[in-house]
Amino acid sequence: MQHAESSLFLAPGQQPLWRMSESSIWSLAEDGHREDPALSIMRTLWDQPRWLEAYHLYDDRGSDLFEKICELPEYYLTRTENALLERDATKIIAAAPVQCIVELGAGSAKKTTHLLAEQARQRGAGIFAPIDVSLPGLLASREYVRAQLAAIEFRGLHARYEDGIFGINKNLPKLFVFIGSTIGNFNPASFVRFFSLLSDAMGPSDFLLIGADRVKDRRVLESAYADSQGLTAEFILNVFKNINRLTGSNFDLDKMRYHSWYNPEWAQIEMYAIAATAQEIAFPAFGKSFHWHKNAKILVEISRKFDPIRLQEQLGFFALSPVQHFTDANEWFSLLLFRKAT
Ligand code: AVI
Image (cartoon, rainbow, N blue to C red):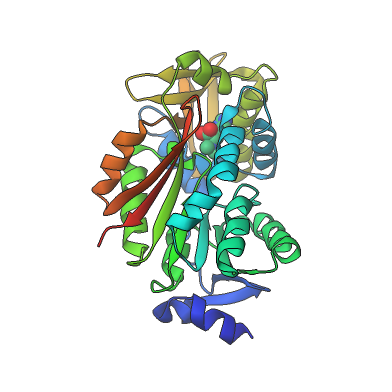
């Protein structure tokens, strides 16, 4: 069973590298080149200005808080994108004749169910292949697919995107789904690296669906990241509890505050932690410390906003051709469908 399932799905040269760690979920047999998160934190905290990689935000508490943010009245992104997927799934699936839907960073994959249900309706069969570093999210989506979508086969990859995308057979026609505005959390260097890798991993019959938040009135943008319940502040400052756990540092949440603003030149929301008083931050495991001056900032996260036409043009330089563009009546959010240019 394991062999039959994997031989059609995994890329031929990759099969020895993966093992089925749970029913229908594959992990890399040896994952020796995973980055040490404590070292990643030190590298960017010593940069000028100080900043953090976004993935440190998603410990158990951070993931919980993010789920709650998605329900906030000010955070229009999730419900707008979900409404687009619900409204346009028929057209998206009709335009992308594929056998497999690969979701990058799927979590519990709630929004993708619109596409899966449509794949089942239009083609009577399909594979759902979420790629995620979080096992609980993969298990939840496997249970959902098995219970609700009998025509869809589940094949999860418990891996980082950059490993998972090369694991799947290039000749299997696929729709890569990269939604949730995650594209906005890349800095310019990681953006270029990600799309170069993804384009290389795509086969000649593959498509890509991106969910991108758009440039709009700054009041709408700023209130989505400074909600009245203070959940975004809690989410951003929670990263320092995770950092204390990972590095043994002494960040004190009572001695910092959250600040965010929309930077129009970079078309991005910037989310900072600001020192409320001068303090010494020590990292005993590394024998290092720094003086955090009163009012000095650490850039915890960016959330970039896009002009969809410009984004389509930019992705042309990664061998991705625009197929269709879906947006809401306010033009606040875009779903962009591309195909691999041959
Ligand atoms: C995950 N990502 C798309 C969210 C965003 O809107 O950039 C993360 C977030 N940070 C604060 N609020 C939401």
